Image 1 (cartoon, each protein chain N blue to C red):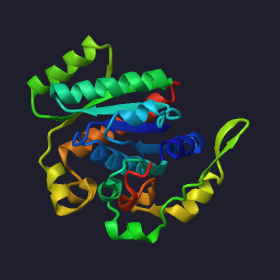
Image 2 (image 1 turned 90 degrees about the vertical axis):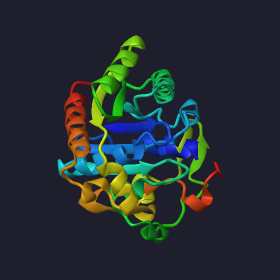
Image 3 (image 1 turned 180 degrees about the vertical axis):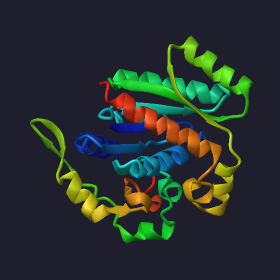
Image 4 (image 1 turned 45 degrees about the horizontal axis):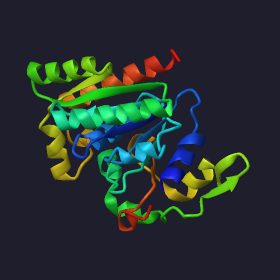
Length: 145
Length: 106
């Protein structure tokens, strides 16, 4: 499947205004097989604890090795300043960009329990707002390349 | 933009992928969301009922051919999407690479 994913991303349109979003496998292994090689940006979603940050870092290194234009972390489920500080410190230590911060939001697991899209379940949720901000900034940043 | 979203299981990568796909579509972008997880859940966070997954056949395994220029798809992405993708809320197109019943096949 990995080779097919890679080719699909390669041929997907990157014309102005078109976006291709790839939800990758949870294990970093697929990255060493080059699934994301033809993406221009990779975001590694991390939670504020070591194992998650370390997995994100490994994924970021693999994506950089693949030659992606932009590789960054996005902090998720951030509860307070302490959580945010931990992610910022980790990113700084390893020279990684922190592209966005999504707060911990009870509405996200609640949507999952209800079997609904978060955007339909709680459109005004703080986490949704943060994801929307991130989306807007990504598209702005895209113009710079 | 071609955006890959990665992360450890449970990190929220799929919730963020699905939500961002729809929000970008609302901002006027044409969005193709690709679920490459062997345990695909992107449909749910996009708001596509899982029953609808059975509307599309599994991707054939002979989609690739080796040429002198390397490995290429035997069909265009438009052709693949036409027969194998689902249309979701806000006009997001979803392409699922591996159906759950075929997980682990490669």
